[in-house]
Image 1 (cartoon, rainbow, N blue to C red):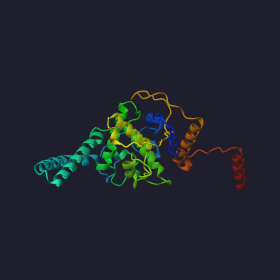
Image 2 (image 1 turned 90 degrees about the vertical axis):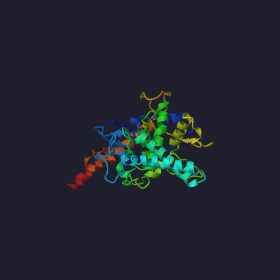
Image 3 (image 1 turned 60 degrees about the horizontal axis):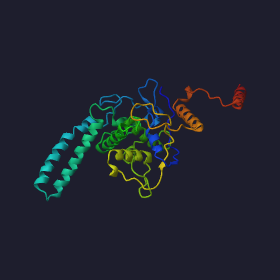
Image 4 (image 1 turned 180 degrees about the vertical axis):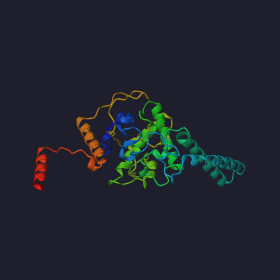
Length: 319
């Protein structure tokens, strides 16, 4: 089993340098995810538990019968192409007709979205929208709808840019799943809670700003900074409005281990976690693992000599 101490974003102290963002992007897969013993499913984070590691197909046993499919969605691309051409001709022939121009723009945008979605989730892809989080957190029809898939596809594309430039160590899809799983977990207040009612909001708003004017409880400021970095290295600096003031929340939950992946450049040796942080991470991991095991199969925990004596007295009294 690939074991690790899944990080938490419970505490996010501010940082004042670009180095924190670089360490955040330098996080390795093993520092975030744990797989099952046979390596076929995710075990941690718990929000992704039982998700297959390998990409699913539309006839996979993992798929639910009510889920929409990527294949069926992409079948609509040809219709959008035809509508785009039709309204382009009408718009050119009737330049004063705003309705034709607006419809042409609508279908032109839709064609662009189809192409982006096909690039990331189409035939031959190793990603599937319904493997974003565990199926219990998905809406009844899954996530194979235009705006959701387009949003995910755009962000994977941005993260690919960071990977190609040597900033990002983890696979872009895995990195995205980690951040969404972290945000989902923040909003699950009680054991057994599910995210199916708000998972789409997380997807659509994770990169948006959270400030005094626009309150956004689904914001991930570090993920937004990653998107801004991707826009800058792609020569699209105006894609995101970067705040003039304020500081980034810390990625203290990310791995501080040196990069071992061959994907991208080495960007220096990040600082290691403190001894107390390591101890707390181990304690947290043990609690989460124990919670996932039925009580009848748990090993007894030694609680000290006083607890042992009290237990012995209780047993003797009961005889």
